Image (cartoon, rainbow over all chains, first blue to last red; front, side):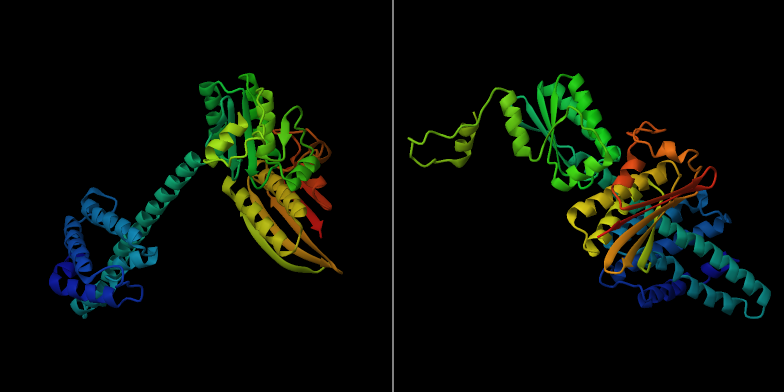
Length: 297
Length: 134
């Protein structure tokens, strides 16, 4: 029955549908042109008619693959163009009105068939509309997953401060999958570089609770097993007080308020010292970067 | 005691613990808590939210701003419908953990707040509320 409604003067139906989409409240003429809309609609309608002709009603079935393919492309394109899920689904839902009008005209004298046709149209278009929303959502979820992975990569920079001295500036939350990645990359760098001292800086960690503390203690213990000493730096006053109230024992772990303090301890342990250039040499330094290098050696 | 404002947060997945911390911090800043008190509240909330998720199988946090005379306070109530705690005294002891943690979450949260109430029965879930006054 639906086949009959769609196949009857397809060109007129297409025109009516496009006009409908153009006049819909959610339509974004700033984001999509009439030509593109015309193309999308033409493709969809011919594919839709073929699927209906097959007689299959399950839109997940093989006969509907063509329709799904068009909707996949359309939904992801619109997600990129900045449409909302509602605006995207309107593409399908705006086809209801022209089809209803047709059904009324065709079955004006047969209320039972009209009711049946209306139900059929609603059912299939609702499924297709929801399908566009699903595809749209999958696109968004893929973006979120990608961002999470990017954050994992970003958040674990192990830097070499000096020969044999590593630093791991931690930023953000430590109670997720990140901790494992952070720990592994630090331990791996200790192996690769043969570093004797690693400074873990928690200036950028907003909350240190018992789980965070436990992760830190485990990392320190693992590093120690590998022959490297850890210094935890960046313990701000409010964090220090909170750790005391929590009752967390940092034991033999060396802690410092700032990364500079920790670096100074590390240099001392490595048998190095930072000295001021001799005052007798009054000439101003030509290159400030080289000057600071000279200072630390 | 008049409750000025209250809002509820769901704790269903690990990311929610982060959102709870942010919500508590924001509320504590609004109420004018100093940095140390903010940090204490956020840390206690982090411990309890994680307990709600890990042991209670998820639950809710109710955030309430309180007024008592001239004092302003923030009350956090964590509720779950999990298995409950059989021996509260043991659970409150420093170093006791059934899951390989440090065993300081509950007792630490109590030390980080001014008032602490725990109500739990096996099979009926757990309800913990903490209050910190400014």
